[in-house]
Structure formats: C-alpha cells, structure tokens
Length: 615
Image (tube, rainbow, N blue to C red; front, side, top):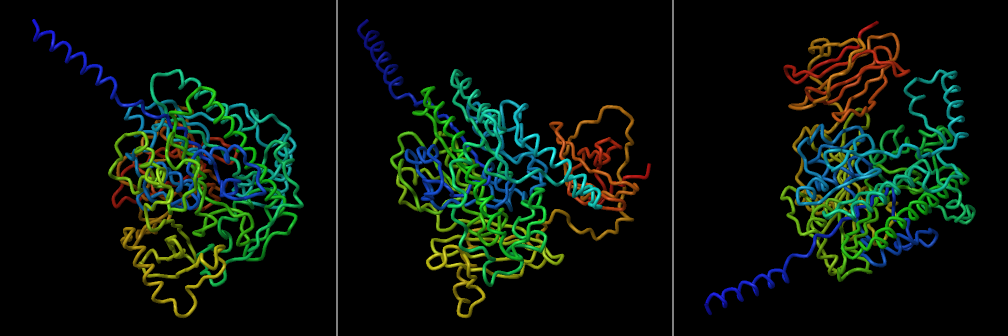
C-alpha cells in the first residue's frame, strides 16, 4: 500500500510539474502593411511629419533603419515578403503577374501560420490589389463596400476629362487608364474613407479573434500614402504647404546608365503620376523637375496621407491595448518600398536606388530586450517570414531565402548579414536587362545584365560615406575597376546567378511565326454561364490577335471568380502572355459587353494564338 501511495504522490508531482513548465501560449501577430510608405516618419528623424502613433509604436519596438525591399514596386515586393523568396525565385517581376500563375504551390506567411494552429484574416492591401490570394486566409478577402475616395466633384471632372480625350482622338486604352485628380481635400469622417473603412474591418475582426480560442494572424493593409493623395481635411491642415522642404537633388544621378530609369515613357515609374488627369501632361524627369507649386502640392498630399494612415494605425494599436492583447501580440509594421518625393526628379518608385528600395520596418515582440532601440543592421523584407516564425515558435520552412531577425530584437547592435539585395527589370531599345542592386555598409553597387548573353551592360556605384543621396555614379570614373570587380564577386557569391538567356520579360519572343501557331477554340457569347477558370500544368506562350474592326478588351478570370483586365487591343493589335492550360480568358468590348471567351489548351511547343474574330 505504501508503494502505491508513493507512486500516486510521484504522479501528482509530475502532473503539477508538467503544468508549471507547459509551453506559453503562442503570440498573436498584428501585421500592418502601408503602401508606398518611405521613411517619412518622426521615428526615422523626419521632423516635419506628424506621425505620433507610429512613433509611439517605434518607442516600444525595434526600428530598423536600413531595411530593403527586394523589388521597388508593389506586386513583386509584396509577393517576395509574403513568400520569403526573392523575385528570381517567385518569377514575379511585374505588376501584372499573378503569383499563383507562376508558383501555384507556394506557402505564404499566413498559410504557414494556419498550418500551425493560427486563425489568419487579412483586410485591405496585403498582396497586390487584384489578387488577395484567398487560399492564404481563413475567410475570403473583401474590400469595403460603401466607403468613398474621390468626391463627386472629382468624379464628374474625370467624366468630362475623358469626354475631351475622346474628342481629341485618344485611344480607348488611354481613356480607360486615366484617373481623377492626384490630390484632393475631402470632407468625410475617417471611417467613411476607403482606408478608414479598411481599418474598421480590421478592428471588428480583432474583437472577434480576441474572443476565440486560437492565436491569430491579423493583417491590415492601408493604401495611403499611395497615389491619389485624397484624405480628410484635418490631415491637410496639419501642414503649411509653403514651409514644406523640397528635395535637394531634383535631377537624375550623374553618370547613371539609361536603363537606371528606363526609356523615355517610363522614367522610374513616373508614368504612374501621369495616369492622373491633373498631371497627365507633367514633364518627364529627364526634362527637368516639376514646377515648384506642383512639388509642394504633391509633397503636402503625401504628408497628409501619411498622417491619416498614422491615425488609422493608432486606432488599431489602441484597440489591441483595450482588448488586453498587447502583451501577447507581435506587431510588425512595414512599407512595401520607398517612394520619390522629387528626388532624382521623380515622384514614384521603380528604381534600384536607395530612395526606392529602403522602407520602414518596425517589429515589437513583447519583452524583447531591444525594444525602444534602433538597429542599423542591414536587413531585407525576405527576413520577415522567418522572423515571425521564430517569434511564434513554429518551424521555419527550409525554402525561405531570408534570415530571422530575432537576434537583432535581442541586441539591435548585432549583425545578421553583410549586404541587402534588390533588383529591377528594364526594357530599353528592344533589349531586356535585369539590374541587381547590392547595399553594403558603405556602397550601393548595381549591375545591369543583358538578358540574352548575361554580359554586364552597365554598372553603378554610389559611396554612401560621401554621397548618401546617390547623385554621382562612381562606376564611370577611372580607378574603380578593382572595387567594382570585388563588389560584383560579392554579389554573385551571395545570390545565385541566372542562367542565360534569362527569360524574365512579360512575353518571350517566339521562334515560330504567328501564322504557324495553333489556335485556341473561340467560344462566342451565347448567354450561358462561363466555365470555371482552372489554370494548371506547364505554361503556354499565348498571343491574342484582334481581327475585329473595333477594340477588344482581354480579361483574365481568376480561379476565385474575380476579373483582371490585361489589355485593350485595337484592330489588328496583339498581346502575348504566359498562361496555363485551363485558364479562362474573356473578351469584351469597350463598354464591357462580353463577346466570347477562350479556354487555354495544351499545345505543341507550348505555343498558341487566340484569334478574336470579326463579328
């Protein structure tokens, strides 16, 4: 009997011991993305800006002073961060490439967390707008339904502007692309603004998640300060436009190669600003900076948009505190890339320069020893995925190409890597180039490779010790050969070098004449329901040909049923794209009336054409 009693005592002690050392609950993740947000925040030393809420977050977190995106444009940058893979691995180099069309089986951050017991919900812009990637979330993504952006006055102005464009003989594609004003003061409550409504969606979800029994991954993606700068009046009123400082280097970098900003009608993404009716005739950066009044208007609008978004971030963080969740929630705030506010004459992104590739990254992990400090370590957005896994105590997938930043959260003065890498594709004079940028502690080195031969077409070198604004390309000066060779070797000792010819262009020139390529079946509109889009299998290089006398719009139907317009083809116009068998492509007229559709079929040599016939 004594032995039985002793065994029972040991069993009870063991049970109590196991309870006392039980694993702590997994932390929640509050994941905040801000579109086009550069380091224009008080916590990054910008005294002009009003950003009290993000500054307060930074005061209780680790703020990374030198965090770099992998490609300075929305879709590739977000795909890279959300998959932990570099653009050459994701094959997403362009805005119009849907992630699942090239890497259908990739596991994103929220997918991975869901596999390990988390409930994941996303609101606003986390992935690129047309493709919210519903397979990543526990509930389908939904945009706010009744929120506003432009005023009715601005919308009426756009309608009239389009009428004038039509009267002036502009193409339907150009008319469809134009948008209302780039800046506008609106008199609406925050919650009725589109971004404010995204914030309310996230707050409502947070309340429900707090009542649940699972740790959560809650993502909120704000679109401002992306163009257009349309925000409530009180945020404009925070600033005196006449006192806003302007860029001190409104010129292209001296000695930079032509592909650094791209061909005349690209200019470092400047076309994006010209998509708005009030800036449709703005002069290109190569022709000189915008007039001062325009510069002040745009910078004022950007500042107002940052302050508006800061207020929305504050509401999220306040709700986190109110619900008692802050002590067990990792908060990460990031901007998807930088943005030019007149630097190099630009007002957008899409270059390999510091101003476009560097962006905010702030991480608050409860009880992290480094909280409240800044880190000057070089870090990358591909590091976010493994870092969150590390902080949540879940396995880090071996395929990831970044490094956990957990050591920096413990000691912000530590180092996790010697360089950060970005890239950008360019087409110039009918040749394709890929530019690879490496940011070391002192230098930014950029190597432009010819996509066919792999030869170095141009090099750029900027010394941040003497030229932090990257105004002078030292690579064209004498005496730099040894340094350039050393940096090139470091670049390719770290990154896998592509195999050439390197097919990263949107379309790959076909060696087979179009007339000889097999045609897909044309299904004329008959009023019946469309088939389901089910892209799968090996890619087909498909060329659309419009034989109609009128323009035709090419629309891809995403597997979840959403629509993505790719191109409006004039008579005899063509458009080529890589797509998969089973993908559904709808053809409609410029009024949106459906004309018919194609379903991609496997074809010999993976080549096909889709001929839009005459009525």
